[in-house]
Image: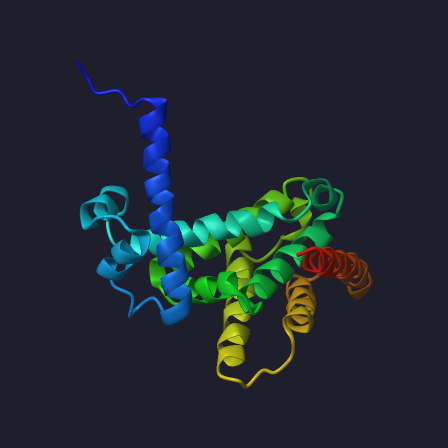
Length: 224
């Protein structure tokens, strides 16, 4: 007779898995990905090495899970109704803006995403998410990416984001995340051939979005 998990067993397993993820996330953020060992994660999570390897094949797969969870959480925080009310051009601008700023904010999430961006398989997963969101944004406005191979445009767009991030890490770029996000949003719209007036309208929508996010964050801090 095959083994069947009970609801209680599933809840217990999910708690253990979440303990491991939370422990790894804190360690990766505080001391870095490379230096963190699986044994340190086990100690922090108060579990066994066997449990860790039951849920994750290796440290890289653990990081990949963390990054995917964080990206989904960050995008979940973007109001769905508001997002779908935007034009295709504004959606493209918002995707670039959000990817840029979420990698640069001075918090634990940004540090983890920055770590993930330095690991090839995780960086690929981050690009794949960017790629998927762009295509979803263009579902009803595919004319925005015509002519040259669409994937080449997306590689170039994401490449511009990561190049600026590298310069930001080294201190060569001193502008704040919002200004960099707006710059790259405009840059990428121009690169795919969006006319200046349409680009300005899209960026105005993103500016309003950013103001609402800052206001929401400020109110949250006041209530803590």
